Image 1 (tube, rainbow, N blue to C red):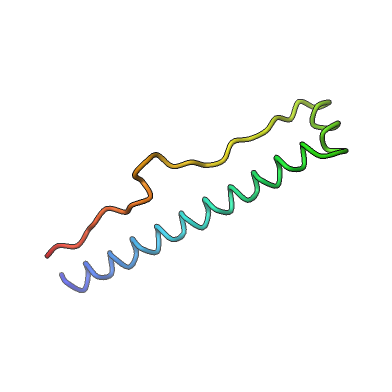
Image 2: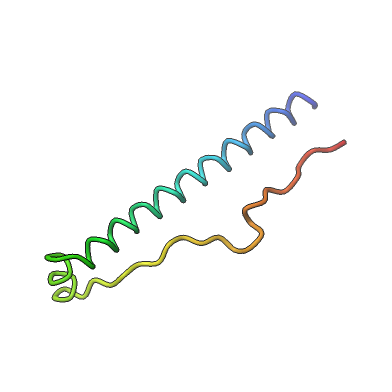
Amino acid sequence: AVAAFRDFQAQYEGMENRISVERRKFNDVVRLYNTRIKRFPGKLLAGLFGFEEKGYFKAQEGTENAPDISFK
C-alpha cells in the first residue's frame, strides 16, 4: 500500500507539472497572437477579418497551491 501511494504521489506531481507546462505554452501562444494582431500589417488584417485580442489563462485564486495528499 505504501509503494502504491508513493507511485500515486509521483504520478500526481507529474500531472501537475504537465498542466503547468501546458498553461505556460498556452500563454506564450496567446502573447504571440496578441502581439501580431497589434503590429502592422497584422493590425490591418486582424481588423479586416475581425480578429480580437485573446485572454491569458488565469487560474482561480488559490489553485497555484497543490493540495497536500500525504498521510502521516
